[in-house]
View 1 (cartoon, one colour):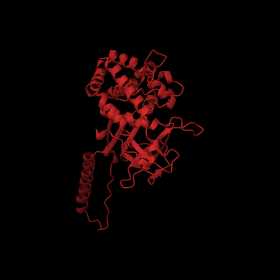
View 2 (tube, one colour; view 1 turned 180 degrees about the vertical axis):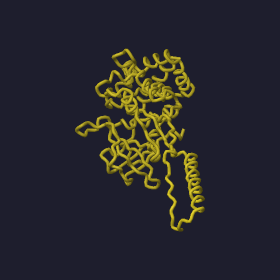
View 3 (cartoon, one colour; view 1 turned 60 degrees about the vertical axis):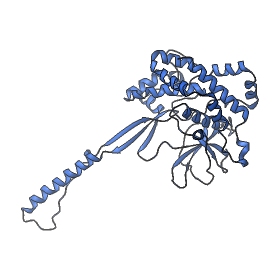
View 4 (spheres, one colour; view 1 turned 90 degrees about the vertical axis):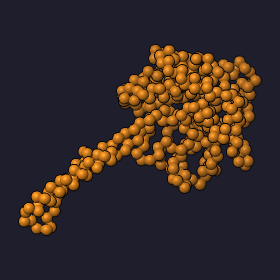
Length: 353
Protein backbone atom coordinates (compact mmCIF):
# COMPACT_ATOMS: atom_id res chain seq x y z
CA UNK A 1 0.00 0.00 0.00
CA UNK A 2 3.04 2.26 -0.13
CA UNK A 3 1.86 3.72 -3.43
CA UNK A 4 -1.04 5.36 -1.57
CA UNK A 5 1.10 6.99 1.13
CA UNK A 6 1.36 10.77 0.94
CA UNK A 7 4.92 11.95 0.44
CA UNK A 8 6.33 14.92 2.37
CA UNK A 9 8.30 17.71 0.68
CA UNK A 10 9.86 20.81 2.23
CA UNK A 11 9.43 23.54 -0.39
CA UNK A 12 10.66 26.41 1.79
CA UNK A 13 13.59 27.11 -0.56
CA UNK A 14 11.70 26.59 -3.81
CA UNK A 15 11.22 29.60 -6.06
CA UNK A 16 7.69 31.00 -5.76
CA UNK A 17 6.03 32.15 -8.96
CA UNK A 18 4.01 34.95 -7.41
CA UNK A 19 3.09 36.63 -10.72
CA UNK A 20 0.55 33.99 -11.70
CA UNK A 21 -2.92 33.78 -10.21
CA UNK A 22 -4.19 30.27 -9.55
CA UNK A 23 -7.80 31.30 -8.87
CA UNK A 24 -10.17 29.89 -6.27
CA UNK A 25 -10.67 30.79 -2.62
CA UNK A 26 -7.92 28.72 -1.05
CA UNK A 27 -4.42 29.95 -0.28
CA UNK A 28 -2.40 28.93 -3.36
CA UNK A 29 0.78 29.65 -5.24
CA UNK A 30 3.00 28.08 -7.88
CA UNK A 31 6.38 26.72 -6.78
CA UNK A 32 9.22 25.57 -9.04
CA UNK A 33 11.09 22.37 -8.21
CA UNK A 34 14.78 23.39 -8.12
CA UNK A 35 16.33 20.49 -10.06
CA UNK A 36 13.75 20.13 -12.84
CA UNK A 37 12.09 23.56 -12.81
CA UNK A 38 8.74 21.76 -12.97
CA UNK A 39 5.72 23.70 -11.72
CA UNK A 40 3.87 22.54 -8.63
CA UNK A 41 0.76 23.99 -7.01
CA UNK A 42 0.84 24.50 -3.26
CA UNK A 43 -2.57 24.81 -1.60
CA UNK A 44 -3.41 25.52 1.99
CA UNK A 45 -6.93 25.69 3.37
CA UNK A 46 -9.70 28.17 2.70
CA UNK A 47 -9.25 31.64 4.17
CA UNK A 48 -11.86 34.28 4.92
CA UNK A 49 -11.69 37.83 3.53
CA UNK A 50 -10.16 38.84 6.86
CA UNK A 51 -7.39 36.27 6.38
CA UNK A 52 -8.64 33.78 8.95
CA UNK A 53 -8.01 30.11 8.12
CA UNK A 54 -11.58 28.86 7.92
CA UNK A 55 -11.07 25.11 7.55
CA UNK A 56 -7.58 24.16 8.80
CA UNK A 57 -7.85 20.50 7.73
CA UNK A 58 -9.19 21.12 4.22
CA UNK A 59 -5.87 20.28 2.57
CA UNK A 60 -5.95 16.91 4.33
CA UNK A 61 -9.33 16.20 2.75
CA UNK A 62 -7.75 16.94 -0.63
CA UNK A 63 -4.91 14.49 -0.01
CA UNK A 64 -7.10 11.72 1.39
CA UNK A 65 -9.57 12.10 -1.50
CA UNK A 66 -6.73 11.86 -3.99
CA UNK A 67 -5.33 8.64 -2.50
CA UNK A 68 -8.72 6.96 -1.95
CA UNK A 69 -9.75 7.89 -5.49
CA UNK A 70 -6.59 6.29 -6.88
CA UNK A 71 -7.19 3.17 -4.81
CA UNK A 72 -10.73 2.86 -6.23
CA UNK A 73 -9.55 3.32 -9.82
CA UNK A 74 -10.48 6.94 -10.52
CA UNK A 75 -8.16 9.12 -12.65
CA UNK A 76 -6.92 11.46 -9.93
CA UNK A 77 -4.48 14.33 -9.81
CA UNK A 78 -1.98 13.23 -7.17
CA UNK A 79 -1.83 15.39 -4.04
CA UNK A 80 0.84 15.09 -1.35
CA UNK A 81 2.07 16.96 1.73
CA UNK A 82 4.19 20.10 1.45
CA UNK A 83 5.77 22.37 4.05
CA UNK A 84 6.81 26.00 3.63
CA UNK A 85 8.24 27.66 6.71
CA UNK A 86 7.93 31.08 5.06
CA UNK A 87 4.22 30.87 4.25
CA UNK A 88 1.32 31.87 6.48
CA UNK A 89 -0.08 28.37 6.15
CA UNK A 90 3.13 26.47 6.66
CA UNK A 91 1.67 23.14 5.65
CA UNK A 92 -0.66 22.19 2.82
CA UNK A 93 -0.98 19.93 -0.20
CA UNK A 94 1.07 19.98 -3.37
CA UNK A 95 0.38 18.67 -6.87
CA UNK A 96 2.40 18.71 -10.05
CA UNK A 97 1.03 21.00 -12.73
CA UNK A 98 -1.10 19.30 -15.36
CA UNK A 99 0.40 21.73 -17.90
CA UNK A 100 3.73 20.07 -18.69
CA UNK A 101 4.94 22.39 -21.45
CA UNK A 102 4.03 25.47 -23.46
CA UNK A 103 2.06 23.34 -25.92
CA UNK A 104 -0.39 22.22 -23.22
CA UNK A 105 -3.49 24.02 -22.05
CA UNK A 106 -6.18 23.37 -19.46
CA UNK A 107 -9.60 24.66 -20.45
CA UNK A 108 -11.92 24.72 -17.44
CA UNK A 109 -15.57 23.80 -17.69
CA UNK A 110 -16.62 27.41 -17.28
CA UNK A 111 -15.10 28.27 -20.66
CA UNK A 112 -17.21 25.68 -22.47
CA UNK A 113 -20.40 26.63 -20.63
CA UNK A 114 -20.08 30.36 -21.26
CA UNK A 115 -18.91 29.71 -24.82
CA UNK A 116 -22.01 27.65 -25.49
CA UNK A 117 -24.34 30.09 -23.67
CA UNK A 118 -22.68 33.55 -23.58
CA UNK A 119 -25.23 35.05 -21.19
CA UNK A 120 -24.65 32.34 -18.60
CA UNK A 121 -23.22 33.77 -15.37
CA UNK A 122 -22.00 31.09 -12.93
CA UNK A 123 -22.47 33.39 -9.96
CA UNK A 124 -25.98 34.49 -10.91
CA UNK A 125 -27.34 31.35 -12.55
CA UNK A 126 -26.36 28.61 -10.13
CA UNK A 127 -29.58 26.64 -10.73
CA UNK A 128 -28.78 26.46 -14.44
CA UNK A 129 -25.58 24.54 -13.76
CA UNK A 130 -27.11 21.16 -14.63
CA UNK A 131 -25.78 17.87 -15.92
CA UNK A 132 -27.80 18.41 -19.10
CA UNK A 133 -26.31 21.88 -19.59
CA UNK A 134 -22.81 20.46 -19.27
CA UNK A 135 -23.64 17.74 -21.81
CA UNK A 136 -25.10 20.24 -24.31
CA UNK A 137 -22.01 22.46 -24.02
CA UNK A 138 -19.61 19.56 -24.55
CA UNK A 139 -21.62 18.37 -27.55
CA UNK A 140 -21.52 21.85 -29.04
CA UNK A 141 -17.72 21.72 -28.90
CA UNK A 142 -17.68 18.17 -30.34
CA UNK A 143 -16.48 16.87 -26.98
CA UNK A 144 -19.51 14.74 -26.14
CA UNK A 145 -17.18 11.73 -25.67
CA UNK A 146 -16.19 13.38 -22.38
CA UNK A 147 -19.71 13.15 -20.93
CA UNK A 148 -18.70 9.79 -19.46
CA UNK A 149 -15.94 11.60 -17.53
CA UNK A 150 -18.51 13.96 -15.99
CA UNK A 151 -20.52 10.94 -14.88
CA UNK A 152 -17.38 9.39 -13.40
CA UNK A 153 -16.69 12.58 -11.45
CA UNK A 154 -20.25 12.59 -10.07
CA UNK A 155 -19.80 9.01 -8.88
CA UNK A 156 -16.49 9.91 -7.22
CA UNK A 157 -18.01 12.96 -5.52
CA UNK A 158 -20.73 10.76 -4.04
CA UNK A 159 -18.02 8.71 -2.31
CA UNK A 160 -16.26 11.62 -0.62
CA UNK A 161 -19.31 13.89 -0.34
CA UNK A 162 -17.79 16.71 -2.38
CA UNK A 163 -20.20 19.64 -2.50
CA UNK A 164 -18.14 22.03 -4.63
CA UNK A 165 -17.72 20.56 -8.12
CA UNK A 166 -18.25 23.93 -9.76
CA UNK A 167 -17.38 24.98 -13.32
CA UNK A 168 -13.70 25.56 -12.58
CA UNK A 169 -13.20 22.22 -10.84
CA UNK A 170 -13.17 20.12 -14.00
CA UNK A 171 -11.69 20.66 -17.42
CA UNK A 172 -10.15 19.41 -20.63
CA UNK A 173 -6.44 19.27 -21.43
CA UNK A 174 -5.30 19.98 -24.97
CA UNK A 175 -1.90 19.57 -26.59
CA UNK A 176 -1.00 20.92 -30.00
CA UNK A 177 1.76 19.57 -32.19
CA UNK A 178 3.29 20.90 -35.39
CA UNK A 179 2.39 18.62 -38.29
CA UNK A 180 5.91 17.65 -39.40
CA UNK A 181 4.76 15.89 -42.56
CA UNK A 182 3.10 19.04 -43.87
CA UNK A 183 6.18 21.07 -42.96
CA UNK A 184 8.34 18.65 -44.95
CA UNK A 185 5.96 19.01 -47.89
CA UNK A 186 6.27 22.77 -47.70
CA UNK A 187 10.07 22.68 -47.57
CA UNK A 188 10.15 20.27 -50.52
CA UNK A 189 7.83 22.56 -52.46
CA UNK A 190 10.08 25.55 -51.77
CA UNK A 191 13.18 23.73 -52.98
CA UNK A 192 11.39 22.69 -56.18
CA UNK A 193 10.59 26.35 -56.82
CA UNK A 194 14.23 27.30 -56.21
CA UNK A 195 15.48 24.61 -58.58
CA UNK A 196 13.12 25.75 -61.32
CA UNK A 197 14.18 29.38 -60.94
CA UNK A 198 17.87 28.47 -60.96
CA UNK A 199 17.35 26.37 -64.07
CA UNK A 200 15.73 29.31 -65.82
CA UNK A 201 18.47 31.67 -64.72
CA UNK A 202 21.21 29.35 -65.93
CA UNK A 203 19.88 29.77 -69.44
CA UNK A 204 20.21 33.53 -69.26
CA UNK A 205 23.21 35.93 -69.16
CA UNK A 206 22.49 37.41 -65.70
CA UNK A 207 25.31 38.46 -63.34
CA UNK A 208 26.57 36.15 -60.56
CA UNK A 209 25.15 38.30 -57.78
CA UNK A 210 21.59 37.85 -59.00
CA UNK A 211 19.41 36.66 -56.08
CA UNK A 212 16.59 34.18 -56.19
CA UNK A 213 13.54 35.17 -54.08
CA UNK A 214 11.11 32.45 -53.09
CA UNK A 215 8.14 33.22 -50.85
CA UNK A 216 7.31 30.56 -48.29
CA UNK A 217 3.62 29.83 -47.97
CA UNK A 218 2.90 29.51 -44.24
CA UNK A 219 -0.58 28.14 -44.93
CA UNK A 220 1.03 24.72 -45.26
CA UNK A 221 2.01 24.75 -41.59
CA UNK A 222 -0.78 23.30 -39.45
CA UNK A 223 -1.14 22.10 -35.90
CA UNK A 224 -2.79 18.93 -34.66
CA UNK A 225 -4.71 19.23 -31.39
CA UNK A 226 -5.10 16.30 -29.00
CA UNK A 227 -7.75 16.49 -26.30
CA UNK A 228 -8.12 14.45 -23.14
CA UNK A 229 -10.14 14.96 -20.01
CA UNK A 230 -8.17 16.32 -17.08
CA UNK A 231 -7.65 14.10 -14.01
CA UNK A 232 -10.00 14.78 -11.12
CA UNK A 233 -8.71 17.74 -9.13
CA UNK A 234 -9.79 20.23 -6.43
CA UNK A 235 -11.80 17.81 -4.31
CA UNK A 236 -11.10 19.18 -0.84
CA UNK A 237 -14.63 20.31 0.02
CA UNK A 238 -15.55 17.03 1.71
CA UNK A 239 -15.00 14.52 4.50
CA UNK A 240 -16.18 16.78 7.32
CA UNK A 241 -13.52 19.42 6.79
CA UNK A 242 -16.06 22.10 7.78
CA UNK A 243 -16.66 20.64 11.24
CA UNK A 244 -14.92 21.63 14.48
CA UNK A 245 -13.11 19.03 16.56
CA UNK A 246 -16.01 19.05 19.03
CA UNK A 247 -18.50 18.37 16.25
CA UNK A 248 -16.35 15.52 14.94
CA UNK A 249 -16.41 13.84 18.36
CA UNK A 250 -20.19 14.14 18.54
CA UNK A 251 -20.62 12.56 15.13
CA UNK A 252 -18.34 9.66 16.04
CA UNK A 253 -20.47 8.94 19.10
CA UNK A 254 -23.83 9.36 17.44
CA UNK A 255 -24.63 6.94 14.60
CA UNK A 256 -27.81 8.75 13.61
CA UNK A 257 -25.98 12.05 13.46
CA UNK A 258 -23.32 10.53 11.21
CA UNK A 259 -25.89 8.94 8.90
CA UNK A 260 -27.82 12.21 8.68
CA UNK A 261 -24.62 14.03 7.70
CA UNK A 262 -23.93 11.53 4.93
CA UNK A 263 -27.51 11.54 3.71
CA UNK A 264 -27.84 15.32 3.40
CA UNK A 265 -24.76 15.78 1.23
CA UNK A 266 -25.63 17.57 -2.03
CA UNK A 267 -24.02 17.80 -5.45
CA UNK A 268 -23.11 21.17 -6.90
CA UNK A 269 -24.20 19.85 -10.31
CA UNK A 270 -27.96 20.23 -10.67
CA UNK A 271 -30.51 18.27 -12.72
CA UNK A 272 -32.85 19.79 -15.30
CA UNK A 273 -36.29 20.68 -13.97
CA UNK A 274 -35.19 20.77 -10.33
CA UNK A 275 -34.63 24.09 -8.64
CA UNK A 276 -33.01 22.54 -5.59
CA UNK A 277 -29.73 20.67 -5.53
CA UNK A 278 -29.93 16.91 -5.61
CA UNK A 279 -28.45 14.65 -2.97
CA UNK A 280 -25.45 12.76 -4.34
CA UNK A 281 -27.20 9.39 -4.56
CA UNK A 282 -30.39 10.96 -5.94
CA UNK A 283 -28.36 12.43 -8.78
CA UNK A 284 -26.73 9.08 -9.51
CA UNK A 285 -30.11 7.33 -9.57
CA UNK A 286 -31.27 9.82 -12.18
CA UNK A 287 -28.07 9.22 -14.16
CA UNK A 288 -28.56 5.45 -14.05
CA UNK A 289 -32.09 5.81 -15.42
CA UNK A 290 -30.87 8.04 -18.24
CA UNK A 291 -27.55 6.32 -18.88
CA UNK A 292 -27.29 2.72 -17.55
CA UNK A 293 -23.54 2.75 -18.33
CA UNK A 294 -23.21 4.81 -15.14
CA UNK A 295 -23.27 1.49 -13.32
CA UNK A 296 -19.87 0.48 -14.68
CA UNK A 297 -18.16 3.05 -12.45
CA UNK A 298 -20.11 1.82 -9.44
CA UNK A 299 -19.22 -1.80 -10.28
CA UNK A 300 -15.55 -0.83 -10.43
CA UNK A 301 -15.84 0.69 -6.95
CA UNK A 302 -17.51 -2.48 -5.69
CA UNK A 303 -14.75 -4.67 -7.13
CA UNK A 304 -11.99 -2.60 -5.53
CA UNK A 305 -13.72 -1.85 -2.24
CA UNK A 306 -11.89 -3.11 0.83
CA UNK A 307 -12.68 -1.33 4.08
CA UNK A 308 -9.53 -2.57 5.83
CA UNK A 309 -7.27 -1.20 3.10
CA UNK A 310 -9.17 2.09 3.05
CA UNK A 311 -8.63 2.37 6.80
CA UNK A 312 -4.93 1.65 6.31
CA UNK A 313 -4.62 4.42 3.70
CA UNK A 314 -6.31 6.98 5.94
CA UNK A 315 -4.45 5.95 9.10
CA UNK A 316 -1.09 6.30 7.31
CA UNK A 317 -1.90 9.45 5.35
CA UNK A 318 0.39 11.57 7.56
CA UNK A 319 2.98 8.86 8.18
CA UNK A 320 5.77 10.84 6.52
CA UNK A 321 5.30 14.04 8.54
CA UNK A 322 8.64 14.72 10.37
CA UNK A 323 8.65 14.40 14.13
CA UNK A 324 9.22 18.14 14.60
CA UNK A 325 5.97 18.87 12.72
CA UNK A 326 3.84 16.37 14.61
CA UNK A 327 1.32 19.09 15.51
CA UNK A 328 0.29 19.26 11.85
CA UNK A 329 -0.75 15.61 11.77
CA UNK A 330 -4.37 14.67 11.23
CA UNK A 331 -6.06 13.74 14.50
CA UNK A 332 -7.17 10.16 15.09
CA UNK A 333 -10.74 11.38 15.47
CA UNK A 334 -10.77 13.02 12.04
CA UNK A 335 -9.25 9.91 10.51
CA UNK A 336 -12.02 7.85 12.06
CA UNK A 337 -14.65 10.24 10.73
CA UNK A 338 -13.16 10.16 7.22
CA UNK A 339 -13.12 6.37 7.29
CA UNK A 340 -16.72 6.10 8.47
CA UNK A 341 -17.97 8.67 5.96
CA UNK A 342 -16.22 7.04 3.00
CA UNK A 343 -17.20 3.46 3.83
CA UNK A 344 -20.81 4.40 4.57
CA UNK A 345 -21.06 6.33 1.32
CA UNK A 346 -19.54 3.48 -0.70
CA UNK A 347 -21.92 0.94 0.84
CA UNK A 348 -24.88 3.19 0.03
CA UNK A 349 -23.59 3.66 -3.51
CA UNK A 350 -23.20 -0.08 -4.13
CA UNK A 351 -26.84 -0.61 -3.15
CA UNK A 352 -27.83 1.22 -6.35
CA UNK A 353 -26.55 -1.67 -8.49
